[in-house]
Amino acid sequence: FGISHEVIAVGAVGATILGIQLLVFGVLADMIYSLHREQIVRYDRAISDEAVTESSADDGE
Image 1 (spheres, rainbow, N blue to C red):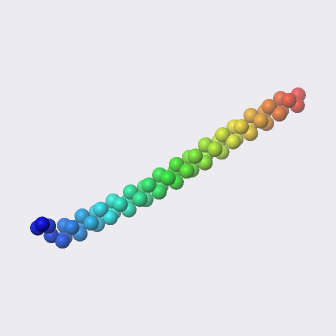
Image 2 (cartoon, rainbow, N blue to C red; image 1 turned 120 degrees about the vertical axis):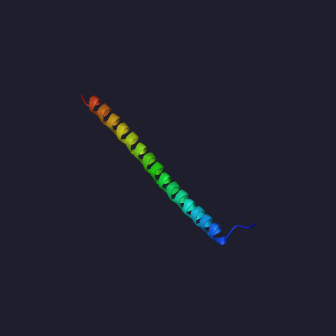
Image 3 (cartoon, rainbow, N blue to C red; image 1 turned 60 degrees about the vertical axis):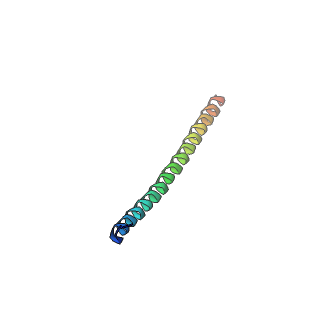
């Protein structure tokens, strides 16, 4: 094909670095998304607990 091995080596290194970056950013994105879901669940739980506390305080009057 007439392509020197240096060019192929540079392309392979570039593709390897790109693949590793995609993998790392994918893992980071998954971690951020999981943390976001966990925070939403905690927020919803805190809001529902607060509503229950307020309604039980109103019932006590």
